[in-house]
Length: 92
Image (cartoon, rainbow, N blue to C red):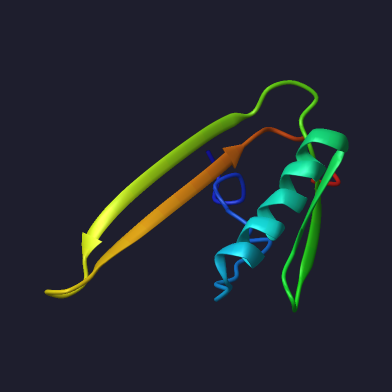
């Protein structure tokens, strides 16, 4: 495998602070696009990226963790990861 084949391109990364209701609305919009479209647009206040959705199944991973923050609080982290293949964007 060459270095070019091994290169990962980050399309979008954001860390947002929102209310549970705002986060639910954002996730609901994402779910609607997953269900309805051939493309998925991921948007933040500053950026927006659109990618093709798979014709078949995708890989879906969920992880829920609890990590102690201090004597009074724990941090809960929910990670949702979706993976799928799309045709390469190489012009070769």
